[in-house]
Length: 451
Image (cartoon, rainbow, N blue to C red):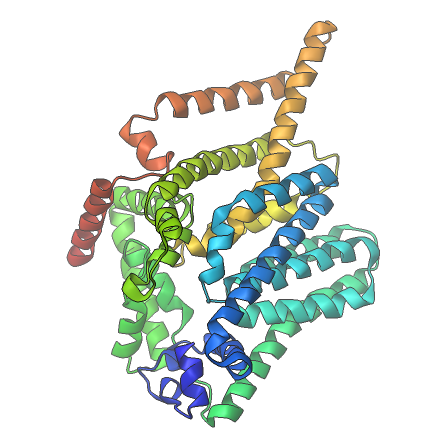
């Protein structure tokens, strides 16, 4: 909002100065233009208007993820239960105060996914234009939406290669989705340049973020800006320095394999082991700028927060376990559509191993695990019922299915019974103690200083 206010005042220092945020991060131009538009319409109430936009986006996300679940699993009940669980997830609504484009971008991309899944069934031309425009809008609002776009393109390529149908339409859809990114990116840059009369800078290369992630504990530590500054704000030179740093980091981890494993496990913990996905922090990280009433103080700082955290922790572990059940037990019936939410979640997990560690970055993929978990528990219940029926009717038992169920139950019992051990506490319970995290940070700093 501050950059948008400066634009309306005729101050373009953030774009012209090499130390300016927009000079370093031109991919945020779309978000700034939205902020400026809201400021023009609502003035001082623009922040409230953005929160209303976030609220609308919340409703859209709940509905669209529910629809995607129904289409993916060909089961309306899974979509219905997905909507209920998302409504009960308080973190989704806590993000309403987070004016960073996450919820609006997510709303656009979920509608686009719905259009793509429908397109795979009916090949309607209008879905091509609609999906391309929404994908482009999602991209300029939040660049990370390209991960979900990648999952959509993978499925479209599968259709193009292996399915019978209108393959020319599928090829047009793939091209249009990619074209939408380019058109909206160029369009936003053109509008920004028309307002500021300053050419859009190349900004920091994405390799700087990967270097920051792999060389530290994964959280933001300023490496991206420092490398860019040391390169004289020259993007090609900054890329070269980032590549050199990545080679040095790779060599260090290659020579110290235990250190890499330690880094990887804690990188995953830092991102995925907060059941609230930083939704509390987003509302408490404003210091004294916000004065909370007693109810909200209890919600974000006191007793209500403790209760919610306890419940969210149980739900978090339950959803992850259910997703595992789906992966091992779900009856595919030669239909691959159910992989849509699973591929999005797995793709997000894989990408953020090499990206900045922040729970609020990965929460969108966690939401797609919810329908997977529901399908997993349904598959688990059906497998148990089939085994009971087979035993009761004296029929042969599917030994492979029985083995998977026994392994799942045994693994769950081991994790539960071992919940008091350091290994389980640090890598399964998703609740590292402050002492453990502090010790880990010290070890990372020692590794960096010796590298």
